[in-house]
Image (cartoon, rainbow over all chains, first blue to last red; front, side, top):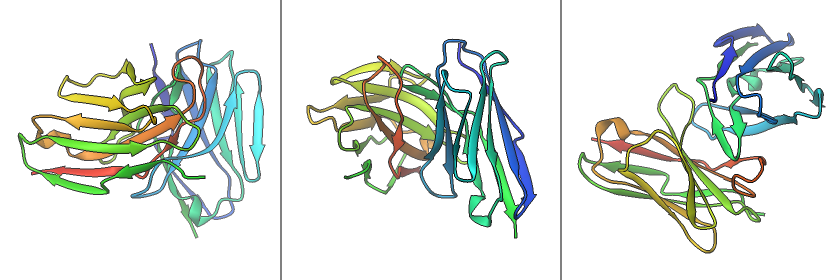
Length: 110
Length: 115
């Protein structure tokens, strides 16, 4: 079955620091790992994703790493800014369906 | 290139009524998935439509039904509304149904309030 665990549930950092959010999944058939950012009152937005044949992907200040053996993948945000404050989700994505947990609330203090 | 659109933006209904929400997928996408997001929680998968058929369904009662049209747009219908149906309803579009996984793009959502 599909089950994703996300840690931590809340994260508070100072502006300029790095933030790391980790997700553990259960379905070994999963091969696509997206990260969504949802600001208050807005839609979830895809910010980065990775496929199982790649170990790491970067896009400016954001990176995602995947460890298929351990079944976890992580979101890394460097040089955090107040506008990075949001809820971040790592749904377990399989066969066109995404199973979301309750996300990580990131607060970046100026 | 139009993104995912949803209508209406907000809706207020009373218990027992019926509601229809609408979604137009991103240009080039053929698959529409619907999600329910309660306050403070992640989106919960309701169902997915591809080639005008329901392909997958989450743990939602039969009061929740849908439809997909030949132009790939979709409707979500909820009958016999309950107070607990109050939520943000999100539509997400993608390409290829369940055959393989591609990026899902979300619409702005419809905020449903049941009184």
